[in-house]
Length: 300
Image (tube, rainbow, N blue to C red; front, side, top):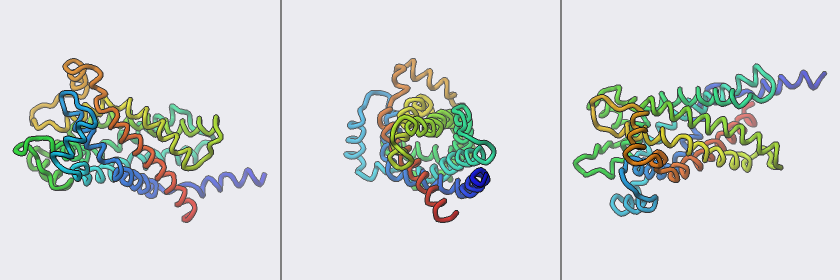
């Protein structure tokens, strides 16, 4: 009887406050972005290039024409995107899991995890779309002719100029594609990550720790990259458009790419995307797990 009474107390003590959940989620995403940002630059440039180019060709062109620091173009936008998008989506997902632990016993089914992840992704993506628009434009700017470049000084300069030159709603350009991508990404990444952890621990000798987090993250990252690519390339092309006229929809952009360039081009830039999503998934989720562990250890 004593043990039964102790379990609820242990669960209650381990609950992380909502604000801390959001803060740790944002810090995890920002730390991961500092490492993988060059792959965002390469991915975005491949996705707007109408023609064939390998990762090495893109890297060589960026390095020879713009220099080594060009691989960190738009880092400020990347960090602001993580501070908004990842803070909200990872914080929301963790909070929904904490709510489940408080109300129910046992692990949530995959369908419940998917719903939690999709909801968290949609909310986070909408909040993070302005930084995403700035990120796409800043990472691609260097490939344009000098007279066509936007030359944003930083993410906040980008926000101000976009509102002044194109209108406030342009900050949410491509938000439908961004939210659609985020739902797919988060279901693939967060729910699959949780499920992968359960499968690995139930079928191997790997226990809770960094090794488990790494293996689950790499599995999750591959599935995430594959599932999200068509949405990602549509989002990138819409957000990079300069037109102030009516923009094409996400589905029409996908269909146009498949028709004019080939269906395989919906996965254009897959490997730089995985080279970004894979390590970023590992870094973000491992750092997040460790930060939560440290919080529980030292503050609870």
